[in-house]
Each structure stands twice: as C-alpha cells, then as structure tokens.
Image (cartoon, rainbow, N blue to C red; front, top):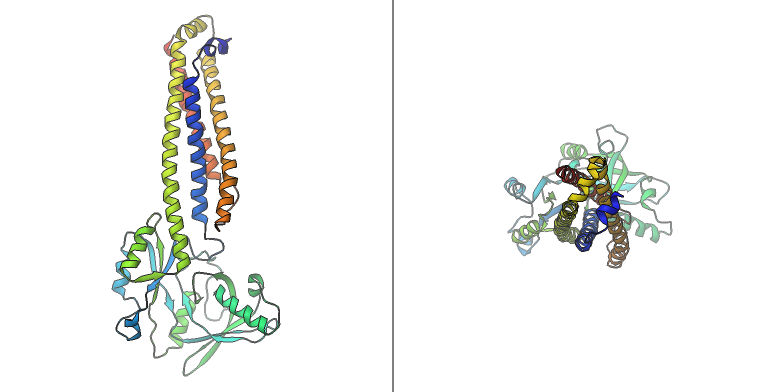
Length: 391
C-alpha cells in the first residue's frame, strides 16, 4: 500500500538520468582504480629491486676517454641529487676494489671460472628477505644476486660443452665459490645464489662482505662511487627524466621505458579517477534530490499514512529500500560493464606486450561497496528527516 501511494505517479525521467550518470561514473571509477593498481605493478615481476628504483650513472664521453672528465660521483654531487624534489631515497652503490673471481664448485656443471665485478646496495632498495641477505666472516656461504645476463652466458657455455642448460631454480642449487685476492694473498668463500636481477649488471653481495673484501684485500686502486641507487617519488618521473638529460646522467633504457609508462599511465588514470568521483558524487546528489522531491510531492499522502497509524520508521524504510534497489542495480551493472571492458582492455595490453595480472583488484570493488554504504547512510537520514517534517 505504501509503495503504491508513494511511487505510482512519480516522474522517472530525472531518476533515469541520475542512474545513467551513476552507472558511467562507477564503471569509470572501478576501471581506473583497477588499472592504476595494475600499471604500478607492471615491470615488478620477480625483480629484486623495489618499485620506482633506478640505477643512475654518468654518461661516458670522449672527455672521459681523454681523462678530462670523471665518471665517479663526489659527496657533493650525491647530496645535491638527494635534495632534489623527485628523490625519495638515494644511496651510493658500493663496488669492489679487491680482486674477485667466481667459479663453479659442483659436479652438476663443468668447471667454469671468470673474474667478476661485485657491488653492494642498501637492503632498503631490495625485496630480499633480510634473514637471507646477511653475511659474517665464518658463515657457510655468501648470498649473492646474479645478473640474468650472467646466467645466459653460463647456459651458452653449457650448450657449447654439450650439457643441459640450467634454469633459475636449478642454478640456486649449484655450488659456486668466490676467490678473493690481491698481490699478496688469496681466500675462498662458498657462494649461494638467492635471486636474479635484470636491472643490475654486476653480482650483488651483502655490504658486510664488500667491506670485508675491501678491508682485507686492498689494492692500489681505491673504490669509487660510479653508480647511485635512487627511488623516484610517485608522479615525479618527468622531473627525474629532465634532470638526467640536463646533468648528462643516464639509467638503464628498459627501466626508463617502464618508469615513463607507469608515470604517464598513472597520471591519466588518476585524472580519470578524479572525474569519476565527481560524476558519482553529482549523480548521487541527483538521486538524493529526487528522493527529497518524492517526499515533498507526497507530503499529503505521507501525513495521511502517519495519521492512520503507520510509523515514520516503516515509511522511511520503504523509501530507503526502493532507492537501495536502484543503487544495487547501478552497482551490479557497473561491475558487469567493468568485467566486459576488462576482458577487452587486457587483450589489448597483452597484444601490446604489456603483461598485467588478470585477476580483479580488491580495492576497485571496495570502492563500489564504500560508495554504496555512504549513499545508504545519506539517503536514510535524508528520508527520515523528510518523513518527520510532514508530521
């Protein structure tokens, strides 16, 4: 009876327009949040470096070849970069000044030995478990992170010897050892691979091992800081790129491409999220006004129902339930539209060579639930106030 009295003669044009606006706003909002998260995840994979982390170095020119310019960083230059607005964290990469070679120490693979270059980075820049990434003199092995290029070289060597190549998992089980040396002495340390990286060209070792080698096997050539590890603040990649160009600095090309892609896409999706929120807010406001108008037009009918013994709570719940159904239809339709759009967008990204996680993101769905909850609370108090005014 209450539904027939209140909703039989309503003008639904305004309601339909508000529903369309809410549907579009929710669809764009869910889609934008989902792909903003996926874009930020892109390029991470199993890479041991943290998000938005870059290695920078000075460009090598003819002046460097003629020894008229330096490729190492001074303390003053490091502090200057650290104070830039785009810098979140920055630390120098430590390099070895002692001689070190890596060789196989297992019957699974043939003997292989090569002089190598090792580096150490602050653990805050990596995703390596701190329990694994530590070393003290006397430990059973030195944990290392191996460049994938080195593994490719090792597999090429294995192929030339006519033996099976090794996978990442198998490589972690193969025994290796370091030979630390200078002109006066040598020392051997067992080595264990704990991860791989595409971003660093040198073998990574814990800083404690680097300090031990530089202290106990000194050479006439002092260690220099030629590379820096830098984490770029979110949304500041453009400033970072401009700074590199002005200062004749460079970073690895694929890292720059991924960083630029994430920065541009992140900015676009952030703008779209802002527009979507405004659209949802305006559409929700129209729905609230529509509920107020509905109560106002049925003021006489509501007053009559109250005089006949109907409680204000019952009338309020009837109005609230009606608009909850409207909002549930909008939310469900937007999620369905998002699911269909997601299939299409994911296929386009895959064709373009951008591999993103195919699952749904929890935050994008929670955004709809949060908006639904806020609208329910607002509409309840709005309906309750309107019904009580008619008494």
